[in-house]
Image 1 (cartoon, rainbow, N blue to C red):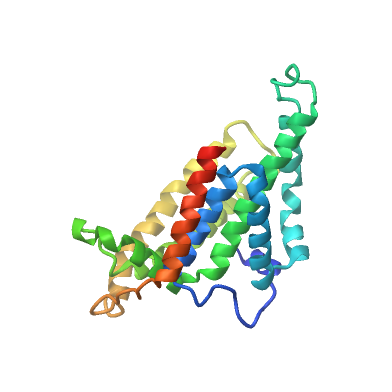
Image 2 (cartoon, helix red, strand yellow):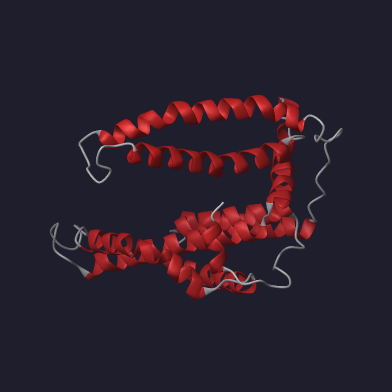
Length: 253
């Protein structure tokens, strides 16, 4: 999806947790995101150590990740400044306080942990494993009419269509800018007009793709959907313990 993100990883012989059940990996990633958002500050320390160790074993390159995140430094500064001058319970609005600065640092730490958990989840859940994980978790909804047999094909089509559609929209906008009398001139409302002009050709391309996909996939669909493997009881107990710890710390915070 994002080719430039490959610079943030180094090749490794084996990834951690790849032998665990895909459904357990997906649930652990979501629990890590929720824990980063809602746990008290002291509980974030062991979570950060766990995510850091998993990222390092997964081939994370700090230098490559830093180069990708350098463009977000202005946003980081805005978040710090906004929190520093908005702690109204410690000082009037607009006056910088150490309490506001600490809140800004905490907010950025939570965001960093969420990004780390998301990156690790994408690293450890390729499309086949993601399909198995979602099929396992959606299996109780099958009596209600939820079709999980073609879930893998649906995910593959969706993940392939999104970047292609985005690239097509960017190409059309570039053509519209080149057709202007002066491409460097920016008039009021022109940006919105260009966005509206992009919609019809993009929707037409999606409609044509929707018409051709059934014919292209007709002979590739499995005759019978494969059933996901059973979740080992040890991994299930570990997830239940993590979920219980999450709820307990949130209630105590």
